[in-house]
Structures are given as C-alpha cells and as structure tokens.
Image 1 (cartoon, rainbow, N blue to C red):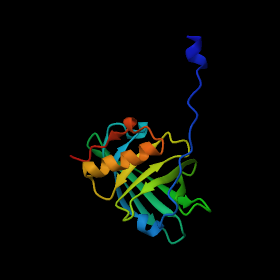
Image 2: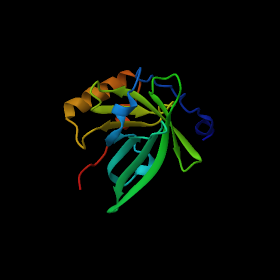
Image 3: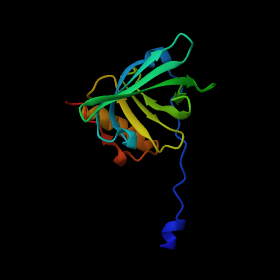
Image 4: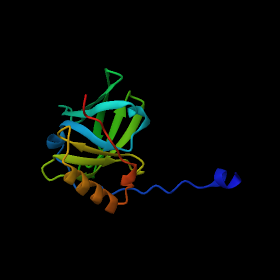
Length: 161
C-alpha cells in the first residue's frame, strides 16, 4: 500500500512540434478521428472543431459533439505563442481556463493533424473529413509512436449517427 502511495508519476515529455503552421490554411473544420478520450468528451459522437481567423489576429474556436442526442459546444479563443512558427497555441476557454494546443504533426496538404499538450498527456488526431483511410491512420500513429506517444491509448471517435 505504501509503495502505491509514494509511486512517482511518469515524467511528462515535452513533444516536438511541426516547424511552422499557416494559420489561415489551418482554419476551417476538423473532425476528431481519435484521441486519448478526455473526460469532457466521454459519451460524445461526431466530435469536431471549427477554427475561424479573427480580424484581430486570434482564432475563434468552436468545439462541438453530439451527446445523448443533443449538440454540446464550447467556444474559445486561440492565440499563437510567439517565436514558434504558429505551431504552439494558447487556448482561452471561459476567460479563466487556458489550455495549450501544440501541433505535433501535420499533413503537407493540411488534410490531417495531430495535436498534443506540452506534457504529452493529451493527444488528438484530426481530419478535414469525418472519416480517414485506415492506411493513413496507421501512418500517423506510426509517426506518433516514433515521437514517443503511447498510441495504444488512442480511442477512435464515432462520427456516425
């Protein structure tokens, strides 16, 4: 029992991000293909995020999903962290809650992305379409595994009715 109480948590590893992101190209709708299933999303289907570049230079964010037959959504604002090629964003929810959004992998054509946090404790695979070819998904998870992510923890998101 004492061993369990004093066991150290694994040290979080800061993931590397992509070199740069064109924010205007990144904006639009992204569908969640898989994630580490954060508690806020339990029971959700049809999870997606919509990003719109604001005239003031930040990104308006709208995350939504279907839960028990009803749409649930939350709005936020995302700001680029300076000197990181727009690959690191700070997301502000409800004025008080802030989160980190790091783009750790991105298709050249912006058709898919992988996003994490500085601690690597969160991970999302996103796509411009609600469905992804299994071969593409496997390539992404192979790349993420090489970067040190535990891809066995990924839970695929139901994008069906």
